[in-house]
Figure 1 (tube, helix red, strand yellow):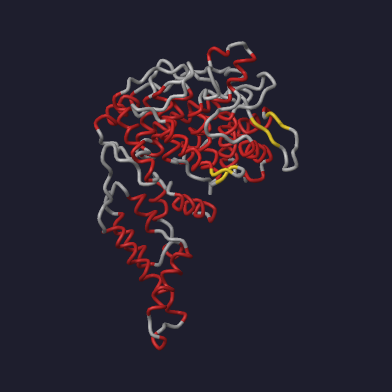
Figure 2 (cartoon, rainbow, N blue to C red):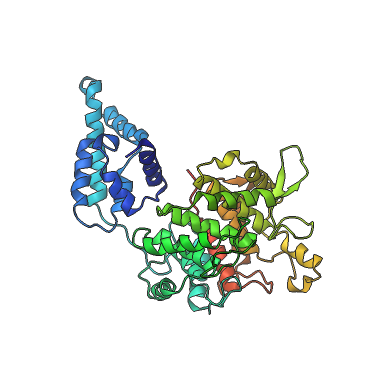
Length: 444
């Protein structure tokens, strides 16, 4: 194994995305490169069996050097001065400490898999009652077909939201919906990307073949200019010339899930996608802090402010594509321009842009206010800040402000709904849950 590969696998274990296959690959590395020989022997002994959660146990057993040193320091501080070991014994003490941690992980009690309707542990306490009400709503609400993924219902979106609240896969309601989604034909960009995100969270090794098919669908359906459209199962030898930014955003999320499962994504696909985001941004005048830019649904829209939802989504997508290309998104001027836009025009109660476009087209009756797709925007905001690992956007604590807004706007039946014709309470409720759960992992 090369040093680069070893470092990549260690990084994946630190962010909690190590797959079963990658865990077994780590087991082939010489013990001196992971842990001391004692701990590695114990780990190897456990690996002879078929534990279903080998990856998570390997991830937990591997410890960063700073953590091992901290364990040794704790032991040394408890010893009398006359009995402190000389330097050559410190590695042995690190071995013993690491072995104790490892045995505790391998032989200790298994965590409770969760009960239906129990929110995930990462939720703030004040959000738990709201999320429980939302789960109850999703269990009884009819799931309408969506224009962006017709003729399929939004099963994968609902499944993703419920999964991140702690509803376990063995829950009958969840399992029935998942079995239907798993057996469905792959079609429509939104559906396939959400499906890949769900499978990547569940078990990327078990569902590798399905994830490979999702990756192939997304690659084959990319438009010639780097965008994605709503997609077809068999795009043919001549894909569309262009698509829209909404589909392009969710395609990036799907590709990240596939790449996280070890499925290669062609560099040309990522290059074209990233180039499109840089070309179609809508710059604003320099206000002293650098370029400010946002994005709309298409490049050809009227000269109004960018969409909040499209800008947040585009920033997240471009960071993902930069990362998969091996680039540092922090040095990407388009990403920084988008983050500055999100900070300057920050809102958790309005989604700027769509209503202005509809007004320009004299279709204002379709959108009564600035809350058009506001919950879709909040989920995009969570992804952009989550991928970047940001607590604030501009001067705003994006999560605290969004949490307060969502708690205030939840309807008595447990749903959220923006009120515009193009919105649906089921979708809006899922977007709100995904904001509250904060499931997006930062790029290392």
